[in-house]
Length: 459
Ligand code: 4AD
Ligand code: MG
Image (cartoon, rainbow, N blue to C red; front, side):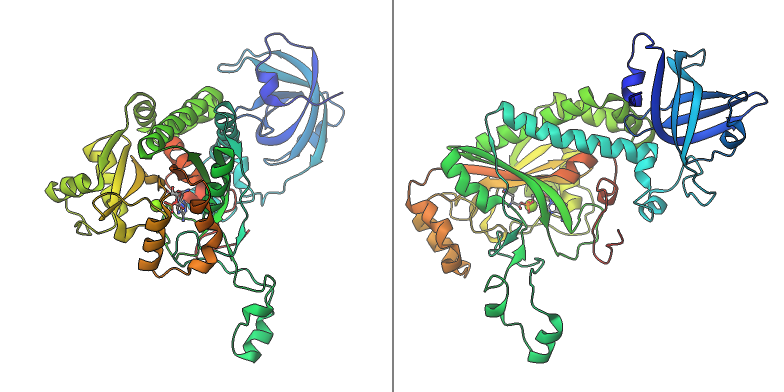
């Protein structure tokens, strides 16, 4: 008999008679004549209740079944007299695949997130983490669906790179030089390294995406990115996933329109396709989640300039740890104040001072600000960072000189501004931050299967 997944069983209108399920025992209780088990196979949040009659051949073994044990059960699917469940399974045969001993750590109903991080290999077997990672999977699919529907092409940007996309450090080095030999020689000789030069793990697929946008029109990359910055916060990971659309013939306004449409589409998709899992988060994890999601779906996102934001922050009565002035980078306390307290909805901030932004952002006529855009959202702060790109070769050239960038390393990037350059724009959306936004999970470590953060790579 073929196995049926529990999410499919639960959706059945009529009983097919006998079915075969496989999964893990969540709870078990015994009465005189019966044993009741809740089985979960990860396909859905909900369990199915199984009733084992004491007249089953191997009942003495069945009595020994513990929480966490894996089982294969054939039985008759019948309407359940119990509340809150349509179906239950009257077992005809129960095979024990593997008994979980008492040391199985998930005995209690509730464990702290901190504890569950120490058993990241088992936490997806809990309701909360099962739900989180089903949503994560569904959202990755939704991204591809959105872009397929919009006619974008998917680009897989390289993960090993010879350039630093931001013109700033904090990258993970890639090398096959033997550290022991390097130590003896006293220095790293990159000529002898694998690529004959320094190379790193990518911090962003943007520069590759730009090249492809200038050929295929609208493209996106979606993949892992790596940052060695030592920021041990609840919103930073050393390895995270970024979605990066890049659009030819698109200006800053078009870029914001696209970002707003994207965030709304993905949120709606989560509500439509993950309703049970999403309900867990609004009922048990974040009481303000419903309202926040409603705001995302139904409000028009605010759009203001960085300069206006500074003005609002300076006039605010709120005490910030860091003072702001034109030219300072906003801290997350400022970003959250703007989105959460002041506008109470997502807000795009545009036209940042050039001094705090990378070389590729388009220079504005004031020669002081660039056509940058960040999207700040309640509960998180920065969700999206992007810009209109500098498409004018002479301006780009001047800016790279100003910033002392090694132009010879970027010859191909400069080439794109020589041969049929066009206005274009794009941004990066932090996938984990988006998942935090729609689930209310407050630590990035809890939306990544096996998180990598400073000082921590246990799994
Ligand atoms: O603002 P960022 O650094 O922008 C870029 O990398 C651009 N090259 C993107 C582009 O224009 N194509 O990063 C984009 C987003 C941030 O807004 C944030 O959501 C997320 O990536 N992000 C991180 N998420 C988790 N951990 C980190 N350490 C992150 N750093 C950035
Ligand atoms: Mg940013």
